[in-house]
Length: 125
Image (tube, rainbow, N blue to C red; front, side, top):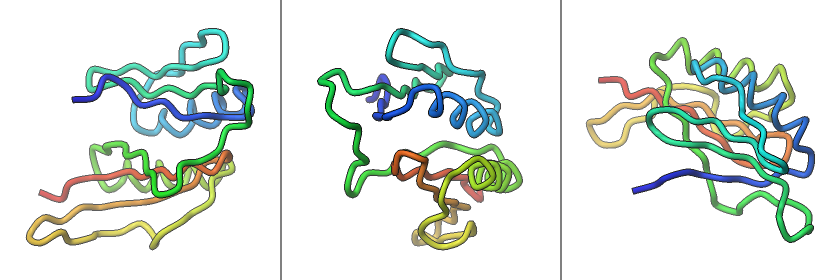
């Protein structure tokens, strides 16, 4: 259904440094830079960060969340810890198991330095 997700930033260099480290915990290669944008391409999709083309400041989506998939609880914990160490702000509940009916997910949430809400998810079986 989706080809890519793109969010805005006010500091592309800082965003690249942040996401290279954060997504590196999930095995994603460093971003490819294309003028005012950076791209993280994987077999399962593309995540991009861009300075707004209209020249206005980037703002975080109210109610929006960008979700990333972790291979394990340990990978999700490393993602969360790395994010906090490099300037993200924890949000929502602490990392842990959430039940959605009979389905259990291990989730962790952060806000990046631009205020975008991020989540990492590991299905628990």
